[in-house]
Image (cartoon, rainbow, N blue to C red; front, side, top):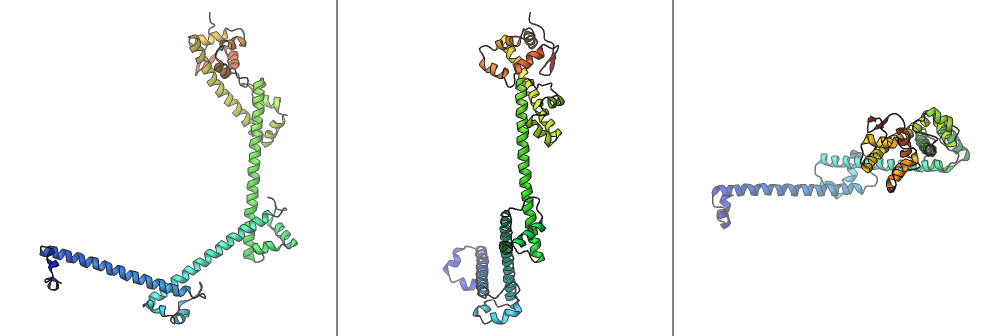
Length: 334
């Protein structure tokens, strides 16, 4: 290469022999890459043209063998685009495998659609419910000679009958799930209705924070809304009751703490003095009068649905009151 290029002026663009060698090596590398890419491109085009030839043969299917078709394919001028015999057979086998995958995918989609259509058909039969049996349904379909069923998903052969049976089981499972969901929703509404009964009784004083489960049953056990929840199970109804009482207890504990804080801030007294002030009042109306001029406090503490002030007034009349976790003995205000 050096002897061929020494008479060329551009040969001396590289000043040293080392630079020329490096440039020559890089040229060979790039030239080799270009040649490889060209060869790959040509091979890819020949392969695509060869596969194009196969696609034109509509009789080919997933069971076709290269040996059976070699002679017929050789009549096409594109056959020799791939020179190696082994490569031709490999491309042929890959193409046949892909045909098989396409056929399987098509059959699977057809079966899935048939199953969906059969399920839709089952939904049109008024006699099917979540307690229906396959034997009874199949007998009914045969009895009425409904051709739609056999057209959608044949059920006479053992394999097809099993597919139909499986789709039937899925349909029944869906009906069962719908029924259970509907039943759960119904029971949830019934429990909410029982909670409304408790709220009404609590507001009227029929149920209090100290009321026990058995006492409530004696009071309201015959109420229609309570009875419906009792039919779900006594433990279910008891949980509804206890959850209601627990929520009211938590709300009361928080509310009475806030009430004491309000009195402490309003009257500039200590917590113990606030309790003494309340316990020294003659009646509940006297406590309500303390909120005069503060409508928000009156709404918060004297709500008729849950009157924290009234419950707290009655508690302060006892010997001991618990505020923010501390037991305090109210000292009457002097």
